[in-house]
Length: 331
Length: 307
Image (cartoon, rainbow over all chains, first blue to last red; front, side, top):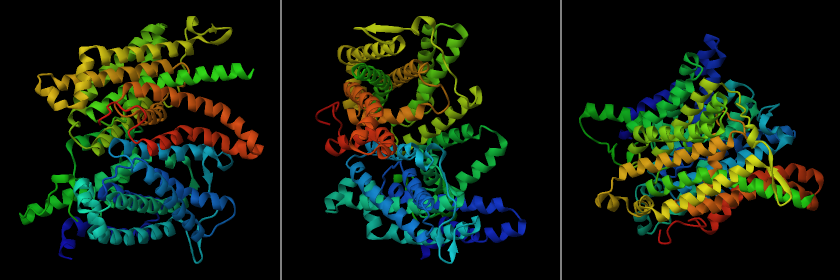
């Protein structure tokens, strides 16, 4: 547990805990926007953490994870449209659908590597996007309003506050789980494969099966984020499935620190925070944002977690990190 | 009636296919030779369309508009290559995706800032807006022109790559860039030229597509993604593969959209056909890609047998 007390872990963990106080603080300030904003941060934190399993641990550059976010959203919107409001049903549909779609697309996509994989995941997400757009009976391009929230018996996702707490608990559990996953034999194999697939294969481990499992896991967790997004917005729209969202998720993961446990949450917070800061400054904030992303990549970033880790190593003067090599950040 | 409709749709598919080829040719070379993922290729297409629209309105000359688009493509391509892309060749694909993703956001927003969110409609010059008589069948002249230009570019590309010294260097560079560099060829300049060439073709495609589509911010993305499908089907790095795959995708997409709902109506009830038809038609090219990949992950017409 000693490693947990390093700043790159301790600070984000404290941040996650502190985020739990947001609804109370917002209520005393009378600012509803804050709750909705931080709920969005948490949900994107979940989605980015999910993507990080495939992208950060497995090295699978999926440019199509918005697909699973979208499936999760429509797993709420379509049943509600037909009068099924049970949250358990929504969750079950989202998990099953994401697992199924993730398995099929993963099987096909993992036949390729590198550029091929990027393009294929992108194409599959686009396929989902076009299916939803062409389903005119479910709103098509305009999206579908969600009349009543997911109903988990005593717990309903009707308000931003309940969505916030749900997302907070899910993210906390998930972060703990990913912490353990990362150091488990499964996580080690996956990360080993990212660095050198051939060596892992020569040890005799069926890497592609590990990768497929990671891809499906990350798809399902992204679907859960989709269920929460649908409830937060009370609206499902095909634009959530557009490839820009997939790109945003990758940016969040890299901005926070690829392959680290807390990075995706920090990335989501920084990404959405920056968006809110830039929006009032200029209508065309996206241009600034785009250039910032390009510049960040050109400079070669180790993400926020990498920065925190560098702070630590400077203080203890003990280079415990191999930040530059492989661009992975130790937990 | 049905035969003329079929012929018209075949030609439309061909026209869409050659447009895709113009985009795919540049992209597949950059992919294959520099192993660079360029998501901003769609932005070059968009910039080409805008450049043509602006110059077209100012001068009224279609030829000048196309020239302006190509020049824009070359200039923007060279600048992009020098400022960003050339620094990224040695990095991994994730960095390529991120950097060019940022560029896509940037270009989309810049275009929106300058020309607004409304689409710009480009009207054709008088001389090109008529129809042409093909064996007793009339077809819009402009669309026919696109087909001709596209096929000419395809032939020119083929000659360039297989019959010229530069083409030889390109082919050699795609197999072993370090060796070509060691033989005294300035591989950086070759890369820059190739990138600018691809950008010019993309801008040309944008200029040609302007009058039949609406010119607006974000117009590059759907076509970029279809182009990626073309490249995957054709085999990464293969120009002739890009041509065949572009034609296949163009035809499958166009014919699928116009005939699949009709076909479905024959076998299923009207409601089902109306609901599923358009959805299935828009998925068709992606399904095609998935099938090709499951069957031959290296694409249908790979550039090199050994690779």
